[in-house]
Image (cartoon, rainbow, N blue to C red; front, side):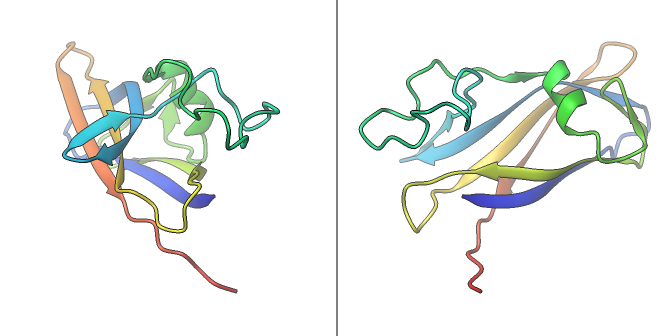
Length: 131
C-alpha cells in the first residue's frame, strides 16, 4: 500500500466547489480511470490475487465523497474551498501488487457560484520508504 496526504489549493479568486474527482493510472499511453466505488478494502476478496481488482465499473467520486474525505481542514464547507485555501485529506492511499507502482494521478472537477467549470490534476509520485 502507498499512503500519502492529498491537498487541493484553490488558486482562483472565487470560491470553488469540487463536484467530482477520480484516480487514474497510466496504462501504455492512456490514463485509465481506476476509481472503484463498489470495491472496498474491507471486502474479503479485495486482495485476492485470482480476482480482477477492477471488476466493478470505474466511476468518479462525488461531492459527497469529497466532503467526507477532505475534512482535515477548517476552511472547507460543503465541498467549497475559499480562494487561497487548501482542502486536505490526511490519509489517502492506493495499492499495487508490485514493488514498482505505475504512474498515477488524481483529477478534480469544480465549479464556482456562477456555474463556471474548472479542472485540475496532479500526478502522484510514489516513493518507497524503508524502515
